[in-house]
Amino acid sequence: MPEYAIPTMQWAQVFEKNGGPIEYKQIPVPTPGPDEILINVKYTGVCHTDLHAWKGDWPLAMKLPLVGGHEGAGVVVAVGELVKDIKIGDHAGIKWLNSSCGQCDFCMASDEPICESAVLSGYTRDGTFQQYAVVNAGHAARIPKHLPLDAMAPILCGGITVYKALKESQAKAGNTVVITGAGGGLGTLALQYAKAMGFRTIAVDTGDEKAQICTQKLGAEVFVDFMKEDVIESVKKHTGGLGAHAVILLAVSEKPFQQATEYCRSRGTVVCVGLPAGAKITAGVFSTVVRMLTIRGSYVGNRLDTQEAIDFFARGLISAPYKVGKLSELPKVYELMEKGQIAGRYVLDTSVCAPLQGHERDRMLTMS
Ligand code: NAD
Ligand code: ZN
Image (cartoon, rainbow, N blue to C red; front, side, top):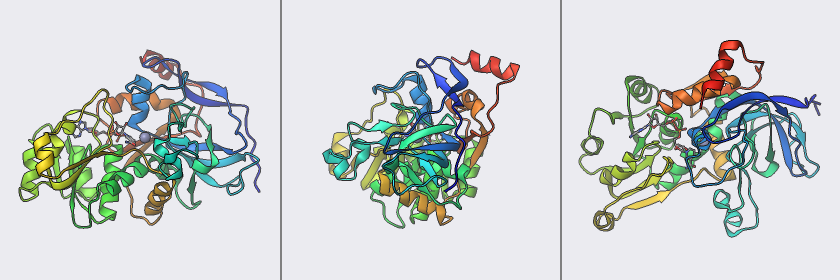
């Protein structure tokens, strides 16, 4: 078994209050409990959920001060005394679900994301915007050693979440699924998972770069630019007037949640995944009834969804765009994300941490 020298201090991105400065600084390396493992995070994706958490967008209490992040892929460097099936040196991942009670009705039915005692990485427990992070061993994602950890990171929230949502959509091979927010982190992955699952896709987002990526690289048959087109009319036009069999709502904006039932086919399913602050979903009762529509929420995935989502990736079926930056660049990534300027995911390399240079430091301190 390899031995790793674990430092006592490490680099992390920490904020003390919602919307306040995000401080890039050294903090102690955490120690795993008996049923936990310590992972040396090599790469961490930045999910829009991390931005919501920093801004305090949701009616859900969080830990403060907080190290955000919940898409961490790395190497196991320490295991608690009760952990038998994960060894030091294995590759493993930290996802949104850090642990759950295991005993409630939901956990017993493998619905652990809705466990009321669930611990959430980068929300109620320090997450992956640090070099060393702790996770309950049962909830750690098992990552085969031959897989690249940078490409793996976005799978650990984005991939799992969209794979689960596509399953929840009840779509069948050959059906058409609309992906709103298709050019973002979850959206680009959703197009790939949908294709691998045999679905046809219509991508909804904005801008030429995202249009090109969605249609040329990710398999979308049609791109609808929500800034230039009437989304309801365009989707109907491309689906023979009937609408799409399913709609996966990933956008960080309320409007698509008010439009989706209007371009969903009768008997179809609208799956809500995106979590814009304070948003409401709107649907006419009459048309929902007489068109037999289903509207549902989908929240990350369970442990089996996790391993299945990783397996799609391992079989070479998932290739979504991502850019790699440094852990110190997190505030810049949030700025780009807020403006909708990231096509795909931003992944941070946590191995190249060093004190900030003068101009970088000024930038960090002016973010608020
Ligand atoms: P992202 O910022 O990478 O992508 C969002 C995309 O939505 C952007 O490309 C943006 O241009 C697009 N968009 C904005 N307004 C739109 C509109 N009106 N129509 C169509 N597209 C529009 O964000 P992400 O990381 O992909 O996360 C998306 C959302 O999903 C966030 O709210 C996040 O918190 C949520 N999320 C939910 C779960 C879950 O389990 N339900 C899991 C992970 C993330
Ligand atoms: Zn996420």
